Amino acid sequence: MEYFLTEEQKTIKSLARRIAEERILPVRAELDEKEEFPWAIMKDLADADLFRVFIPEEYEGLGGGSLELCLVMEELSRVCSGVAISYAATALGCLTLMEYGSEAQKQKYLPVIAAGKKLTAFALTEATAGSDASAIRTTAEKAEGGYVLNGTKQFITNGGDAEIYTVIALTDKSKGARGATAFLVEKDTPGFTFGKKEKKMGIRASSTRELVFRNCLVPEENVIGKPGMGFIMTMKLLDRTRPGIAAQAVGIAQGALEAAVDYTRQRVQFGQPLISLPVVQDILADMAIHVEAARALVYSVAKTIDSGAKGFTEESAMAKVFASDTAMKVTTDAVQVCGGAGYMRDYPLEKLMRDAKITQIYEGSNQVLRNAIAIELRKRKARTE
Ligand code: CAA
Image 1: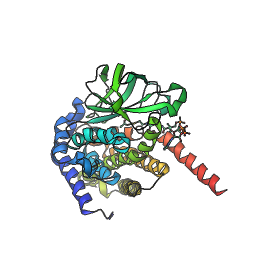
Image 2: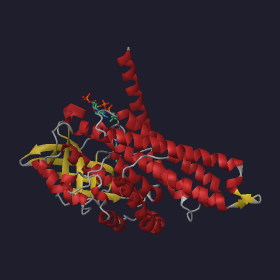
Image 3: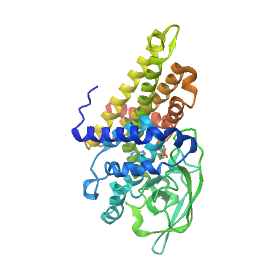
Image 4: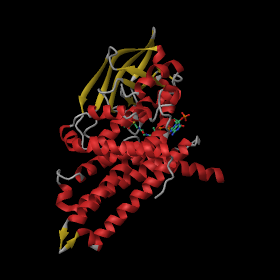
């Protein structure tokens, strides 16, 4: 399918593919097995200027948009989505700052992030607040010179390895969703520590930890945007980032499709390659249809976002739901057509299947997102009545 990418977009995509093939592929099984954070690859991505892709030009970035980030995510995830999410978590971790930060905050942090010298993370989720994201309990009380944070964030991607954190905390408990504020918290701030590294089903190269705040004083100048708007800003930003997770899912599904085609071409049963059997052809064809449909939807939503359109909650949710369900189905079918080999760790498919699962869960579970789509449909219908 021709997506009419610009020359620059093609360059970004092929650069990400080259790093994935040359640097990630040889170590992906080891990173997964040892659950090791991919520091060497983060450096490769930084050296290739890929952290600049999502940062505006005035802060030493390349000024790319949602589509450019999706292209990188797709290519990295085709090989290892644990590496890909470690990269994308930095994009998510600095998006609040990029969109709502002061000039001084942007000047201080964005060039360092663009150079890949510091990773970032985004902290919203808590034990009591997953899908019910406004049920957070971490508080930020006004004190002399800033705010004192108390509470624990859970399941934070890049937790412990990132240097800069965007943390959403309640500055006015009585106001619920309208009482949350976004803060920039640096790793070595007194009162800020980390819980154990989580052991995960998939994306095991990435790190996931608790963030613990105990009387952690964050200076006033580290408030991002307007106090009280932290939750609303976050909801708007997640609408922008969900296509990135959708692109991760497309990459995983593409990787599984290619591995399944390779294997079924070589594997001979009943005197012929598996790929010659109509039953296998049916499965492979369906896989290919779904991967291409997911890609077309993701690129199209990313282009919509980059066009400056307002209000794309529904479209963004659709891309994430469709692509992640596709990744789960395609990787499961790929394991099935490859049989025992698909199930074994010597082949890439069982990893791709484990990695696919999280794309249906994080940045809004597919159930929450279907609910958001249904709400938009109801609103649209009400407007026409
Ligand atoms: N854009 C703008 N504003 C939005 C919005 C959106 N997409 N969604 C909600 N809001 C606003 C609402 O308009 C409302 O504002 P008012 O106070 O003015 O009315 C306010 O936010 C509260 O909205 P709701 O009453 O609908 O909120 P709720 O309490 O019922 O919660 C939800 C619903 C939080 C939106 C939930 O549906 C949701 O999206 N949950 C998913 C949470 C999520 O995505 N977490 C991801 C964590 S980050 C992560 O996963 C990263 C990683 O690991 C890599």
